[in-house]
Length: 449
Image 1 (tube, rainbow, N blue to C red):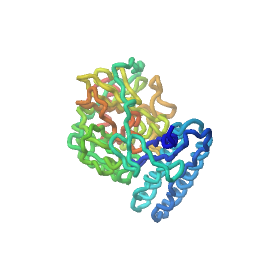
Image 2 (image 1 turned 90 degrees about the horizontal axis):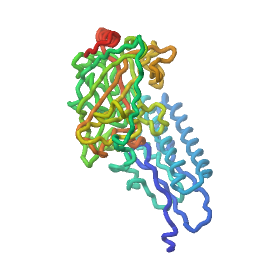
Image 3 (image 1 turned 30 degrees about the vertical axis):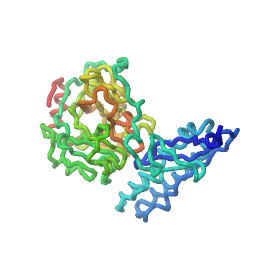
Protein backbone atom coordinates (compact mmCIF):
# COMPACT_ATOMS: atom_id res chain seq x y z
CA UNK A 1 0.00 0.00 0.00
CA UNK A 2 1.36 3.40 -0.91
CA UNK A 3 2.35 5.69 1.92
CA UNK A 4 -0.08 8.37 0.75
CA UNK A 5 -2.93 5.91 1.09
CA UNK A 6 -1.71 4.55 4.42
CA UNK A 7 -1.83 8.05 5.86
CA UNK A 8 -5.61 8.16 5.55
CA UNK A 9 -7.86 10.90 6.83
CA UNK A 10 -10.19 9.11 9.25
CA UNK A 11 -12.29 11.90 10.75
CA UNK A 12 -15.71 12.88 9.49
CA UNK A 13 -17.13 16.19 10.67
CA UNK A 14 -20.54 16.57 12.27
CA UNK A 15 -22.76 19.49 11.42
CA UNK A 16 -22.22 22.42 13.72
CA UNK A 17 -25.20 23.03 15.85
CA UNK A 18 -25.47 26.78 15.66
CA UNK A 19 -25.05 29.69 13.23
CA UNK A 20 -25.29 27.49 10.14
CA UNK A 21 -21.62 26.54 10.47
CA UNK A 22 -20.00 23.15 10.60
CA UNK A 23 -18.11 21.29 13.30
CA UNK A 24 -14.80 20.36 11.73
CA UNK A 25 -12.54 17.59 12.93
CA UNK A 26 -8.89 17.23 12.04
CA UNK A 27 -7.26 13.83 12.38
CA UNK A 28 -4.66 12.13 10.20
CA UNK A 29 -3.56 8.67 11.19
CA UNK A 30 -1.00 6.21 9.95
CA UNK A 31 -3.02 3.17 8.96
CA UNK A 32 -0.12 0.91 9.80
CA UNK A 33 0.24 2.09 13.39
CA UNK A 34 -0.85 -0.55 15.87
CA UNK A 35 -1.98 1.91 18.54
CA UNK A 36 -2.61 5.62 18.60
CA UNK A 37 -3.25 8.06 21.41
CA UNK A 38 -6.56 9.90 21.48
CA UNK A 39 -6.17 13.42 20.12
CA UNK A 40 -7.09 16.37 22.34
CA UNK A 41 -10.10 18.52 21.58
CA UNK A 42 -9.30 22.18 20.91
CA UNK A 43 -11.98 24.87 20.90
CA UNK A 44 -11.61 28.61 20.19
CA UNK A 45 -11.55 31.03 23.08
CA UNK A 46 -14.87 32.78 23.54
CA UNK A 47 -13.86 35.32 26.19
CA UNK A 48 -11.34 36.94 23.85
CA UNK A 49 -14.03 37.57 21.23
CA UNK A 50 -16.65 39.09 23.47
CA UNK A 51 -17.42 42.81 23.38
CA UNK A 52 -17.72 44.86 26.56
CA UNK A 53 -20.29 43.06 28.72
CA UNK A 54 -23.09 45.22 30.18
CA UNK A 55 -23.28 45.01 33.95
CA UNK A 56 -26.68 43.24 34.12
CA UNK A 57 -25.37 40.47 31.84
CA UNK A 58 -22.01 39.80 33.49
CA UNK A 59 -23.14 37.15 35.94
CA UNK A 60 -24.92 35.11 33.28
CA UNK A 61 -22.06 35.47 30.79
CA UNK A 62 -19.50 34.37 33.39
CA UNK A 63 -21.58 31.28 34.17
CA UNK A 64 -21.77 30.38 30.48
CA UNK A 65 -18.01 30.87 30.02
CA UNK A 66 -17.37 28.55 32.95
CA UNK A 67 -19.78 26.05 31.43
CA UNK A 68 -17.94 26.20 28.08
CA UNK A 69 -14.70 25.36 29.88
CA UNK A 70 -16.33 22.41 31.63
CA UNK A 71 -17.77 21.17 28.32
CA UNK A 72 -14.32 21.08 26.72
CA UNK A 73 -12.84 19.31 29.74
CA UNK A 74 -15.56 16.66 29.60
CA UNK A 75 -15.03 16.23 25.86
CA UNK A 76 -11.32 15.63 26.37
CA UNK A 77 -12.07 13.05 29.05
CA UNK A 78 -14.54 11.33 26.74
CA UNK A 79 -12.05 11.38 23.88
CA UNK A 80 -9.53 9.53 26.03
CA UNK A 81 -12.08 6.93 27.09
CA UNK A 82 -13.78 6.33 23.76
CA UNK A 83 -12.78 3.23 21.88
CA UNK A 84 -13.21 2.57 18.20
CA UNK A 85 -12.45 4.60 15.11
CA UNK A 86 -12.64 8.31 14.58
CA UNK A 87 -16.19 8.12 13.28
CA UNK A 88 -17.30 6.72 16.61
CA UNK A 89 -15.35 9.30 18.60
CA UNK A 90 -16.85 12.12 16.56
CA UNK A 91 -20.36 10.79 17.14
CA UNK A 92 -19.85 10.33 20.87
CA UNK A 93 -17.69 13.36 21.64
CA UNK A 94 -17.59 16.13 19.06
CA UNK A 95 -21.17 16.27 17.86
CA UNK A 96 -22.61 16.57 21.40
CA UNK A 97 -19.92 19.13 22.20
CA UNK A 98 -20.99 21.20 19.21
CA UNK A 99 -24.59 21.07 20.42
CA UNK A 100 -23.64 22.20 23.92
CA UNK A 101 -21.33 25.01 22.78
CA UNK A 102 -23.83 26.40 20.27
CA UNK A 103 -26.53 26.55 22.95
CA UNK A 104 -24.21 28.27 25.45
CA UNK A 105 -23.08 30.81 22.85
CA UNK A 106 -26.68 31.59 22.01
CA UNK A 107 -27.46 32.17 25.68
CA UNK A 108 -24.53 34.60 25.86
CA UNK A 109 -25.84 36.48 22.83
CA UNK A 110 -29.32 36.74 24.31
CA UNK A 111 -28.02 37.84 27.73
CA UNK A 112 -26.00 40.67 26.20
CA UNK A 113 -28.86 41.82 24.00
CA UNK A 114 -31.37 41.72 26.84
CA UNK A 115 -29.04 43.94 28.85
CA UNK A 116 -29.42 46.65 26.21
CA UNK A 117 -26.28 46.15 24.13
CA UNK A 118 -26.03 45.12 20.50
CA UNK A 119 -26.20 41.38 19.99
CA UNK A 120 -22.68 40.04 19.34
CA UNK A 121 -22.03 38.81 15.82
CA UNK A 122 -20.01 35.79 14.81
CA UNK A 123 -20.04 33.99 18.15
CA UNK A 124 -21.60 30.86 16.67
CA UNK A 125 -18.49 30.34 14.56
CA UNK A 126 -16.64 29.72 17.83
CA UNK A 127 -18.56 26.49 18.35
CA UNK A 128 -16.20 24.91 15.80
CA UNK A 129 -13.84 22.57 17.61
CA UNK A 130 -11.02 20.45 16.25
CA UNK A 131 -9.17 17.32 17.24
CA UNK A 132 -5.67 16.57 16.05
CA UNK A 133 -2.86 18.54 14.52
CA UNK A 134 -3.40 22.00 13.19
CA UNK A 135 -1.87 21.16 9.79
CA UNK A 136 -4.33 18.36 9.02
CA UNK A 137 -6.84 18.69 6.22
CA UNK A 138 -10.28 19.75 7.41
CA UNK A 139 -13.22 17.68 6.30
CA UNK A 140 -16.91 18.55 6.73
CA UNK A 141 -19.93 16.31 6.46
CA UNK A 142 -22.21 16.66 3.48
CA UNK A 143 -19.60 18.35 1.32
CA UNK A 144 -19.67 21.56 3.30
CA UNK A 145 -17.08 24.32 3.17
CA UNK A 146 -14.15 24.35 5.55
CA UNK A 147 -14.70 28.03 6.28
CA UNK A 148 -17.79 27.16 8.31
CA UNK A 149 -20.35 28.36 5.77
CA UNK A 150 -23.38 26.23 5.12
CA UNK A 151 -24.76 25.11 1.79
CA UNK A 152 -28.20 23.81 0.95
CA UNK A 153 -28.40 20.20 2.06
CA UNK A 154 -25.42 20.44 4.42
CA UNK A 155 -27.57 20.76 7.53
CA UNK A 156 -30.25 18.17 6.92
CA UNK A 157 -32.66 16.61 6.69
CA UNK A 158 -31.27 13.23 5.65
CA UNK A 159 -32.86 10.54 3.50
CA UNK A 160 -33.48 8.50 6.67
CA UNK A 161 -35.81 11.23 7.93
CA UNK A 162 -38.45 10.30 5.31
CA UNK A 163 -40.62 7.18 5.30
CA UNK A 164 -43.43 5.84 3.12
CA UNK A 165 -46.55 6.31 5.24
CA UNK A 166 -48.27 3.36 3.56
CA UNK A 167 -45.70 1.06 5.19
CA UNK A 168 -46.84 1.89 8.74
CA UNK A 169 -49.36 -0.04 10.80
CA UNK A 170 -52.05 2.04 12.54
CA UNK A 171 -50.68 3.71 15.68
CA UNK A 172 -53.28 6.35 16.57
CA UNK A 173 -54.94 5.59 19.89
CA UNK A 174 -58.34 6.91 20.93
CA UNK A 175 -59.38 7.78 24.47
CA UNK A 176 -62.84 6.66 25.52
CA UNK A 177 -65.17 9.40 26.76
CA UNK A 178 -66.64 9.35 30.25
CA UNK A 179 -70.10 10.47 31.37
CA UNK A 180 -68.91 14.01 32.14
CA UNK A 181 -66.94 14.48 28.92
CA UNK A 182 -67.07 17.83 27.14
CA UNK A 183 -67.71 16.74 23.57
CA UNK A 184 -68.24 19.98 21.66
CA UNK A 185 -65.77 22.09 19.71
CA UNK A 186 -65.04 25.69 18.81
CA UNK A 187 -63.20 26.77 15.65
CA UNK A 188 -61.37 30.00 14.86
CA UNK A 189 -61.01 30.53 11.10
CA UNK A 190 -57.94 32.67 10.63
CA UNK A 191 -56.70 31.94 7.10
CA UNK A 192 -53.48 30.29 5.95
CA UNK A 193 -51.08 33.26 6.17
CA UNK A 194 -51.74 33.91 2.51
CA UNK A 195 -50.39 37.47 2.87
CA UNK A 196 -47.08 36.22 4.21
CA UNK A 197 -46.83 37.41 7.80
CA UNK A 198 -43.38 36.08 8.76
CA UNK A 199 -40.55 36.78 11.18
CA UNK A 200 -37.89 34.87 13.08
CA UNK A 201 -38.90 36.17 16.52
CA UNK A 202 -40.51 34.28 19.39
CA UNK A 203 -42.27 36.61 21.80
CA UNK A 204 -42.98 33.77 24.27
CA UNK A 205 -39.49 32.32 24.60
CA UNK A 206 -37.39 35.39 23.74
CA UNK A 207 -39.45 38.55 24.33
CA UNK A 208 -37.68 41.70 23.18
CA UNK A 209 -35.06 39.77 21.22
CA UNK A 210 -35.08 40.10 17.45
CA UNK A 211 -34.42 36.82 15.60
CA UNK A 212 -34.84 34.95 18.87
CA UNK A 213 -36.02 31.84 17.03
CA UNK A 214 -33.27 31.69 14.36
CA UNK A 215 -35.91 30.25 12.02
CA UNK A 216 -38.96 31.71 10.30
CA UNK A 217 -42.50 31.46 11.64
CA UNK A 218 -45.87 31.51 9.90
CA UNK A 219 -48.42 33.68 11.74
CA UNK A 220 -52.21 33.78 11.70
CA UNK A 221 -54.55 35.60 14.03
CA UNK A 222 -53.38 38.93 15.42
CA UNK A 223 -51.50 41.06 12.90
CA UNK A 224 -48.09 42.56 13.56
CA UNK A 225 -46.94 40.11 16.23
CA UNK A 226 -43.19 40.12 16.82
CA UNK A 227 -40.66 39.95 19.65
CA UNK A 228 -41.87 43.29 21.04
CA UNK A 229 -45.58 42.47 21.19
CA UNK A 230 -47.20 43.08 24.58
CA UNK A 231 -50.52 41.99 26.04
CA UNK A 232 -51.80 45.50 25.39
CA UNK A 233 -50.74 45.59 21.74
CA UNK A 234 -52.11 42.10 21.19
CA UNK A 235 -55.49 43.07 22.63
CA UNK A 236 -55.64 46.07 20.27
CA UNK A 237 -54.38 44.29 17.13
CA UNK A 238 -56.34 43.68 13.98
CA UNK A 239 -56.78 39.99 13.23
CA UNK A 240 -57.08 37.56 10.34
CA UNK A 241 -59.69 35.55 12.28
CA UNK A 242 -63.28 35.91 11.12
CA UNK A 243 -64.75 35.76 14.63
CA UNK A 244 -62.64 38.59 16.07
CA UNK A 245 -60.20 36.24 17.85
CA UNK A 246 -57.02 38.30 18.46
CA UNK A 247 -54.96 35.33 19.62
CA UNK A 248 -51.65 34.71 17.88
CA UNK A 249 -50.94 31.30 16.41
CA UNK A 250 -47.48 30.67 14.95
CA UNK A 251 -45.31 27.75 13.86
CA UNK A 252 -42.10 27.17 11.85
CA UNK A 253 -42.62 27.43 8.11
CA UNK A 254 -42.29 24.44 5.80
CA UNK A 255 -40.03 24.92 2.78
CA UNK A 256 -39.57 23.37 -0.63
CA UNK A 257 -35.80 22.83 -0.60
CA UNK A 258 -35.56 21.71 -4.21
CA UNK A 259 -33.08 24.36 -5.32
CA UNK A 260 -35.55 27.25 -5.22
CA UNK A 261 -33.89 30.55 -4.30
CA UNK A 262 -35.88 32.06 -1.43
CA UNK A 263 -36.52 35.76 -0.89
CA UNK A 264 -34.79 35.44 2.50
CA UNK A 265 -31.71 33.63 1.15
CA UNK A 266 -29.29 35.83 3.10
CA UNK A 267 -31.53 36.94 5.95
CA UNK A 268 -31.62 36.06 9.68
CA UNK A 269 -34.00 33.19 10.24
CA UNK A 270 -33.58 32.24 6.59
CA UNK A 271 -30.64 31.26 4.43
CA UNK A 272 -28.03 32.83 6.68
CA UNK A 273 -28.94 30.19 9.27
CA UNK A 274 -29.41 27.22 6.99
CA UNK A 275 -33.15 27.61 6.36
CA UNK A 276 -33.22 27.47 2.58
CA UNK A 277 -35.83 27.06 -0.11
CA UNK A 278 -39.23 28.47 -0.96
CA UNK A 279 -41.62 29.02 1.95
CA UNK A 280 -44.77 27.00 1.29
CA UNK A 281 -48.18 28.53 1.92
CA UNK A 282 -50.43 25.97 3.63
CA UNK A 283 -53.38 24.58 1.71
CA UNK A 284 -55.43 24.74 4.92
CA UNK A 285 -55.08 25.70 8.57
CA UNK A 286 -57.56 24.38 11.13
CA UNK A 287 -57.59 25.86 14.66
CA UNK A 288 -60.04 23.79 16.67
CA UNK A 289 -60.58 23.87 20.43
CA UNK A 290 -61.92 20.61 21.89
CA UNK A 291 -62.94 19.38 25.32
CA UNK A 292 -61.86 16.78 27.84
CA UNK A 293 -62.87 13.10 27.71
CA UNK A 294 -63.32 13.17 31.49
CA UNK A 295 -64.76 16.51 32.55
CA UNK A 296 -66.10 19.90 31.57
CA UNK A 297 -63.57 22.58 30.70
CA UNK A 298 -62.90 25.93 32.34
CA UNK A 299 -62.09 29.14 30.50
CA UNK A 300 -58.50 29.84 29.53
CA UNK A 301 -57.18 33.01 31.13
CA UNK A 302 -56.60 35.83 28.68
CA UNK A 303 -52.97 36.01 27.49
CA UNK A 304 -52.24 32.43 28.48
CA UNK A 305 -49.06 31.37 26.67
CA UNK A 306 -48.53 27.79 25.50
CA UNK A 307 -45.74 26.22 23.50
CA UNK A 308 -46.07 22.62 22.40
CA UNK A 309 -43.28 20.46 21.08
CA UNK A 310 -39.57 21.23 21.26
CA UNK A 311 -37.61 23.10 18.59
CA UNK A 312 -34.43 21.42 19.87
CA UNK A 313 -35.89 17.98 20.54
CA UNK A 314 -33.09 16.15 18.73
CA UNK A 315 -30.51 17.72 21.05
CA UNK A 316 -32.66 17.74 24.21
CA UNK A 317 -33.55 14.06 24.20
CA UNK A 318 -37.12 14.32 22.95
CA UNK A 319 -38.91 14.50 26.31
CA UNK A 320 -40.92 17.55 25.22
CA UNK A 321 -41.30 16.53 21.58
CA UNK A 322 -44.88 16.61 20.36
CA UNK A 323 -44.58 16.48 16.58
CA UNK A 324 -47.26 14.68 14.58
CA UNK A 325 -46.82 14.22 10.83
CA UNK A 326 -49.24 12.41 8.58
CA UNK A 327 -50.98 12.47 5.19
CA UNK A 328 -54.59 13.19 4.36
CA UNK A 329 -56.45 9.91 4.25
CA UNK A 330 -54.11 8.41 6.85
CA UNK A 331 -54.20 10.78 9.83
CA UNK A 332 -56.93 8.88 11.69
CA UNK A 333 -54.64 5.83 11.59
CA UNK A 334 -50.99 6.93 11.41
CA UNK A 335 -49.05 9.78 13.04
CA UNK A 336 -45.27 10.05 12.79
CA UNK A 337 -43.21 11.72 15.51
CA UNK A 338 -39.65 11.58 14.20
CA UNK A 339 -40.14 10.99 10.46
CA UNK A 340 -41.47 13.03 7.56
CA UNK A 341 -44.19 11.18 5.62
CA UNK A 342 -43.84 10.28 1.98
CA UNK A 343 -47.46 10.65 0.93
CA UNK A 344 -49.14 8.81 -1.95
CA UNK A 345 -50.45 10.66 -4.98
CA UNK A 346 -53.58 12.66 -4.25
CA UNK A 347 -52.65 13.06 -0.56
CA UNK A 348 -51.48 16.17 1.28
CA UNK A 349 -48.75 16.39 3.93
CA UNK A 350 -50.32 17.09 7.35
CA UNK A 351 -48.81 18.65 10.49
CA UNK A 352 -50.83 18.24 13.70
CA UNK A 353 -50.09 20.04 16.97
CA UNK A 354 -52.10 19.09 20.04
CA UNK A 355 -51.50 21.66 22.75
CA UNK A 356 -51.55 21.12 26.51
CA UNK A 357 -55.10 20.92 27.87
CA UNK A 358 -54.53 21.35 31.64
CA UNK A 359 -53.81 24.65 33.44
CA UNK A 360 -52.51 25.29 36.95
CA UNK A 361 -55.30 27.78 37.62
CA UNK A 362 -52.97 30.66 38.48
CA UNK A 363 -50.29 31.52 35.91
CA UNK A 364 -50.37 32.62 32.29
CA UNK A 365 -46.69 31.70 31.81
CA UNK A 366 -43.79 30.12 33.70
CA UNK A 367 -40.00 30.37 33.70
CA UNK A 368 -39.60 27.42 31.34
CA UNK A 369 -42.86 28.28 29.49
CA UNK A 370 -44.19 24.80 30.29
CA UNK A 371 -44.79 24.28 34.01
CA UNK A 372 -48.01 26.31 34.16
CA UNK A 373 -49.73 23.94 31.70
CA UNK A 374 -49.68 20.16 31.32
CA UNK A 375 -50.93 17.32 29.17
CA UNK A 376 -53.70 15.03 30.38
CA UNK A 377 -52.66 11.45 31.08
CA UNK A 378 -53.44 8.44 28.90
CA UNK A 379 -57.00 8.31 30.28
CA UNK A 380 -57.60 12.04 29.79
CA UNK A 381 -57.16 13.13 33.43
CA UNK A 382 -55.31 16.31 34.37
CA UNK A 383 -52.53 16.16 37.00
CA UNK A 384 -53.41 17.00 40.59
CA UNK A 385 -53.76 20.75 40.99
CA UNK A 386 -54.55 21.35 37.31
CA UNK A 387 -57.91 21.96 35.66
CA UNK A 388 -59.08 21.07 32.15
CA UNK A 389 -59.22 23.90 29.61
CA UNK A 390 -60.11 23.87 25.89
CA UNK A 391 -57.40 22.03 23.98
CA UNK A 392 -56.09 23.68 20.82
CA UNK A 393 -55.68 21.15 18.02
CA UNK A 394 -53.87 22.78 15.12
CA UNK A 395 -53.87 21.05 11.73
CA UNK A 396 -51.89 22.40 8.77
CA UNK A 397 -51.84 20.79 5.31
CA UNK A 398 -49.74 21.30 2.17
CA UNK A 399 -50.38 20.63 -1.51
CA UNK A 400 -47.89 19.42 -4.07
CA UNK A 401 -45.68 17.24 -1.86
CA UNK A 402 -47.02 13.77 -2.69
CA UNK A 403 -44.11 11.39 -3.17
CA UNK A 404 -41.66 14.14 -2.23
CA UNK A 405 -38.62 14.16 0.04
CA UNK A 406 -37.60 17.70 -0.84
CA UNK A 407 -39.42 19.52 1.99
CA UNK A 408 -38.32 20.35 5.53
CA UNK A 409 -39.46 22.36 8.51
CA UNK A 410 -37.46 25.45 9.49
CA UNK A 411 -35.28 24.87 12.54
CA UNK A 412 -32.55 26.22 14.73
CA UNK A 413 -29.21 25.74 12.94
CA UNK A 414 -28.27 22.97 15.35
CA UNK A 415 -31.48 21.00 14.82
CA UNK A 416 -30.83 19.73 11.27
CA UNK A 417 -34.46 20.28 10.18
CA UNK A 418 -35.42 17.05 11.92
CA UNK A 419 -39.18 16.33 11.85
CA UNK A 420 -39.20 15.72 15.62
CA UNK A 421 -38.41 19.44 16.15
CA UNK A 422 -41.79 20.60 14.84
CA UNK A 423 -43.59 22.80 17.37
CA UNK A 424 -46.30 25.40 17.80
CA UNK A 425 -46.88 28.57 19.82
CA UNK A 426 -50.12 30.16 21.00
CA UNK A 427 -51.11 33.20 23.06
CA UNK A 428 -54.80 33.38 23.92
CA UNK A 429 -56.15 36.86 23.26
CA UNK A 430 -59.82 35.99 22.81
CA UNK A 431 -62.12 38.49 24.47
CA UNK A 432 -63.81 37.20 27.61
CA UNK A 433 -67.21 36.94 25.86
CA UNK A 434 -65.67 34.95 22.98
CA UNK A 435 -63.93 32.58 25.40
CA UNK A 436 -67.18 32.08 27.32
CA UNK A 437 -68.89 31.22 24.04
CA UNK A 438 -66.17 28.70 23.19
CA UNK A 439 -66.42 27.03 26.62
CA UNK A 440 -70.21 26.88 26.45
CA UNK A 441 -70.09 25.23 23.02
CA UNK A 442 -67.52 22.67 24.15
CA UNK A 443 -69.26 21.82 27.41
CA UNK A 444 -72.72 21.42 25.84
CA UNK A 445 -71.57 19.23 22.96
CA UNK A 446 -72.14 21.81 20.23
CA UNK A 447 -69.88 22.66 17.29
CA UNK A 448 -69.36 26.41 16.97
CA UNK A 449 -67.11 28.84 15.14
